[in-house]
Amino acid sequence: MPRFYVYSLDREEGGPSFYIGKGTGKRIDDHEIAALKGEDSHKARIIRKVISELGYLPKRKLVEGLNEEEAFAVEVSTIVLLGRYPDGPLVNKTDGGEGVPGLWDDPEVREKARLSHEATWRDPARSEMRSKSMRDGWAKKMEDSDYQNYISEIRREVWNNPDLVNRVAVAQETSWAENYEQRLEAILAGWRDPVERARRIQAIKDGIRNGKPRDIESFKKKVSARWADPEFNAEQTERIKRVWDDPALIEKASASAVDSWKDPEVKARRAQSMRDGWARRRARLAEEKNKITD
Image (cartoon, rainbow, N blue to C red):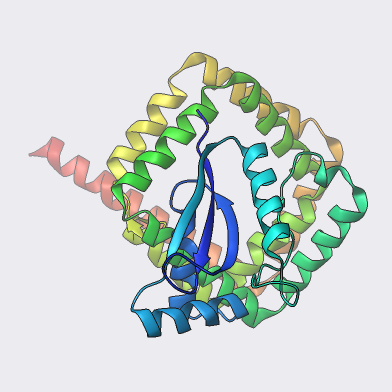
């Protein structure tokens, strides 16, 4: 069912418009939320100015009930018709159409996007700001039961498609095989930062996921039920075997594990973790023994 729409953000009720976009669900509200959270952009400054003057941000869904390609076409034509600054009132940075099928087939486009993306995340201040913004934004969205239901429905549609599930599995295997060191370093970097490590550990202890308390028991039951499915179990086992059948990957993983133990801080932390684990096991065994004795 077509669910895309093209929308406008306006300087006053009914226009003129200063931004044109396309999206689904509550995309039309995302710009206002980002602006009120302090986003630093020309568009965000206009949004805050309009809200300060009117008390709200006028916005309209210009066309609804479109598929994605139709939405791209309407978005592009509307931006071209109204014009981007200095040739028109719109502050859009591009003529729209980002994500048009086939666009990312151009190696030059992909390379430019990759370099731009890496440069943004390489700046520690901007990286932390963007990470916090995404975490806060996701947590805020997940407070909305309608949005939760929408996400759940999308996930069900995706994972009920065997062809898509297989493509995702193959992509994950390929990505890890080709970028193992880079992805591993990205994961470990967060754990090396004392502040980030403390935050992650506390979140795990508190059962926090996406900014919300997680029902641990319910989660365990879902995972157990999924792995109890013989077909799913066999597929995952085979996928893991294919990954570890790669000698180069095994060698990289082994070398990484050995190197990690050379770090005194990591070694001490792991040793303490093992001691704590054994202490918990001994306490549990003693408790069970006492129950039997009683």
